Amino acid sequence: IADTGRNDVILIGHSMGGINTGRYIQQLDPEQVKVKLWITLASPLEGTPLAKFGIGKCTQDMHPDSDVIDKIQSQVALDKIPSLHVYTLTDGVVPARSASSGPKGTIHATYQCQQPYSHLGMRSKPEVDAEIKSAILKI
Image (cartoon, rainbow, N blue to C red):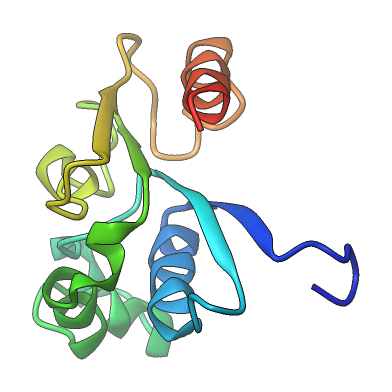
């Protein structure tokens, strides 16, 4: 708010960034900041089995049984936020089911990439950009 003077935001996160923005939303005071749209790209909203091979706290937070994943899945604050969750069947890091299992609210949408993108490859592709732009224009 201090930087822009606005109290409405659109949050976009790739992979763990989607988890981080979700946790941020859950901790906000909705009277102070209005999240107009939450967009995730290949974010492990149900965790990823590959987390067991990683090192560090962030990797542990992406494990399907972690407290962070449990909070993302169980708290209703995210159900009230318009959301778009973009995923691909060829990710290789985050299973499609996990990346598309966002909030269960009525303003939740998913988009499956039609091209065979990798986990990092789906960022900044015309197909993904068009879907994000469409979601933004709908708010």
